Image (tube, rainbow, N blue to C red; front, side, top):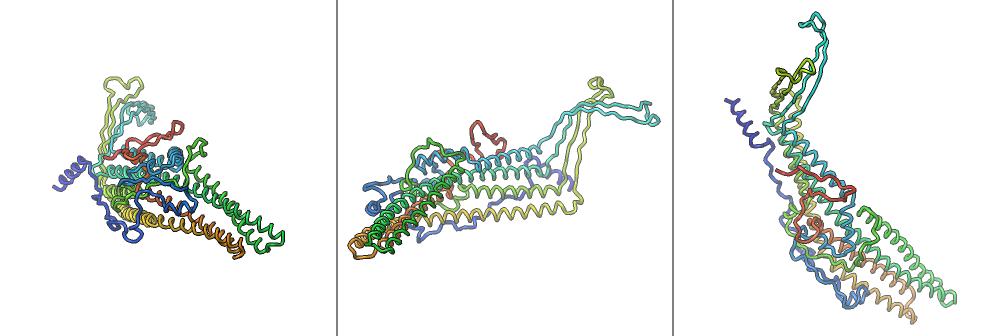
Length: 525
């Protein structure tokens, strides 16, 4: 009775295409249901507006009177639904991102890894089907005359036919391995998607680093020009006996510091270009469209953060971790199935003849059928150890999946905290820069009238220079944070608003010269 029950269960499992893998249950997210609130999280900006008041910005010399940035709003769209061409409005940056998506070698490796996983999946899936081979052979054998019944010592055997074999997957071992390979393929597809989103963010950030260094160079060059003029006057006064050497050397320190900073910034500017070239995968084209300044990038500032649970379907790194968890879960099914019998069918059909000319004559047909069953009895604990390993690997993947969620939560929370502070920080720095400029103007006036020493002028000039650099850096950091928030919320996968998102395993056209073979055949189901 037990034998018949076992056969019935095996047939039912095979007919249903089931495996012995445990039922998958998504682990509960190890985070709170909402992002942090209060404090800096409650000062999130609205639609994009100029960062400082028009009066202070104009007086600080950062933009002409009446200049404004048109307000741009995300209109409640999630980051994943906003195309990168709609998030970034600089045509030069858009062109660089477009080139990078075609040429970047790291992204190309991600796509090739995905395609390699697709091929591996097809290899494993093939094990579910019978194999059929055509075979032809000839054998020659010598038998001692006293042992030969026919008296012939040399015998020939010729054969032509078909050989077939099939392992019947009663207990889902091959099905589990197929499910594991499919999950691993989908994990590499999500890794490719994460790499593409990251590349968009990296190109944008590096491009704005170049713009930041351009602004810093302008500040340093203006400071150097002013300080050189001050040094010229101080030297003229010293040569004429009306000025002290102390004033001369104090003015010289500002010149030399500005000269040193200029060389450092020129070096960083060249290296920033090199980093951008590496990202886009080719030298910077000569026909790039004109770009915008750092102040006019006008990125979307009001993208809603949504709920932490939204990250489970918008962050490809989280989806990659879950696919790896699914692969580990399927591997348990294969480890369990190894404890049960393997049933194989092998057979052949063809013709046999002692001569080549008689292969296809009537009566030469031959066939064989050899079913077999293999039941593990003693494996030295190998199957049990494999099952223990599969269960441990699943626990590792659970922890990895939970860590991915926690990291994503932290990424978004950090970006929101920064977004809630940068506007106020920049406004304060703009007011400080305006005050430092006025302080320098007044110090010059007092020194000219003999009220203050030249040290007061030099101190004001140095402080203005530092304030201007801090302001440029803060503006860059604000833009960088907006790009980071766009990325960590899952933005950067589609090109335009309203587009249907591509599948994570969508093929990429790198051009006819180096186009890889598109992945095929690895569909879920």
